[in-house]
Image: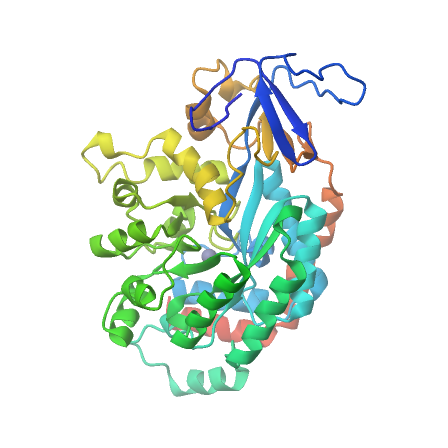
Length: 472
Ligand SMILES: [Zn+2]
C-alpha cells in the first residue's frame, strides 16, 4: 500500500480501517481491535495495490463530447469552434456531458476534480444539471463557476483586424455577451449557497474564465465572495503569449503583479496553465502560496507553450495537475498528465538534480490537487483523511514485476489496471466496472448528442469555421 503520507510509508501488507467516509487507522493486517467483530465489514484486497485517488485539478465537463474534434487549429480557432459545440445545450446535455467526463476519470483512478464550468453563459438550471451529475457520479467535485464581464480580446490576434463582414456577424450573433456584475454576483452566490457542501463531496467556487476577460470590479468581487464563503478561486492564467501582452498594455505590469495588487493572490487561488510567467511572477506565486495547475497535454496539443514547472518547483510554488477538457486533451487521462509532468522539462534542463521526479509528479496529482480543491484531509492514506482510495491490479503486465510502485504508477500505468475506486469510503468502481451508475446508458445517450447540438448551432458553426479560415 502506497500511503503518500508525511513519512512516505509503504506497506507490503496492511489494513485500512474506514468508518463512514473517513480512514480511521492504517496498520498491520488483523491488528485492528474490532477485527472480526460482527459490525465490521471486511473487504479482501489481497493482491491489489492501494493508493490515494488522483485529483484532476482542471477540466471542463462540456468538452466531454468533443474528443477527436480538433487537431492543428490555432488557439482562436479552437476557442470559437469550442463555443459553437458547447452553446445552447439543454440541461440534459449538460448532465450527460458531465457524466461522460466522470466515466473516463473514474475508470482511470481519479476520485476528485475541479470542473471549470461551463464554456458559455449559463443559468441556474445548467448549474443544477451539473450538480446532479456530480452527485450521481459518486466523485468528489469542485464546481468552478466560470464568470467574465469583458470581451474575449485575446481570441482575436490584434495585429490582424477583422474584415467588416466578420465584425458585423460578430455583433449580430452577440456571442458571449458580458453580464451585468450584479447578475454575475447573484448567480455565483446562489450557486454556492445552494450547492456548496464539501462534506458531501461537492464544493462550489467563483472562477473567472481568465483575468484578461474580466474587469477589476469582477476580480475584486471574486476575491470578496471567496473570503465571505470561505471557498477557493479558480481561473485560467497566462495560457497564451497574447494574454501576457494584453495584461501589460492594460495594466502596465504583468497579470500576476496585477492580481497581487488586487489582493487575489493567496492559497485560495489555483491557476490553470500559467505558462507565460517570468522569475518575478514565479516568486510572487510562491510567496502567496498560489497553486499552479499544470496541464501539459493540453498545452502541447494547442502549442501554447511549456510551463516552467521545473523553476516553479525549485521556487516552492505548489503545483497540481490537470487534463483540461477533451477538446484540447482528448482522453482526460491523469496518468498521462503525471508522466508528462515528470518528463516534459527534462530536455531543456541540463541539471538532472532539478528534474521533476516520479514522486513529485505523483504528489502534484494527489496532494497538489487536494490543495487546489481546498481539502486539507485528502490526497493520502492516513488516519483522519477522507477515504478516497484506488486499488490497482499489479498482476497486469506493466506491473510485472513490481519494482517501484511510485515509478510504475507514473511511468508505466495507463489507467487500465484500476480495479476498485472508493470515494468517501463508498465503492464507485469495482473490478474495473463503474457500479455507482449505469455507465453504458450514459455512453448510449451521449453518442448522438454532438450531432444534435451542431444541427441546432449551425449558424454559430458557420461563424467558427470562418474564424478558422481567418486564423488558421
Ligand atoms: Zn481549461
